[in-house]
Length: 98
Image (cartoon, rainbow, N blue to C red; front, top):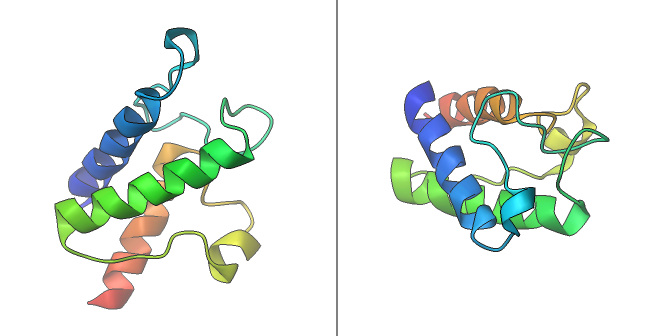
């Protein structure tokens, strides 16, 4: 399951990277920061990534998820701190749906 989640998140990175300059591309790696001072995304970029990730998860796994809700935003550490952390969080949400 984690492989499919990671693939969906990497596809969302591809979607975002198409809109970004070549020198500001996000790396497709578990440690890529999505939020915080080490992230290359501003707040609008993070929103765009989350929307792309939700769409890619639905297309790839057939599950509709809301990633940025009160639960996610209240978690410490944030599930948006990295691609790997978000993949772990998505897995939890998918297990809860089943």
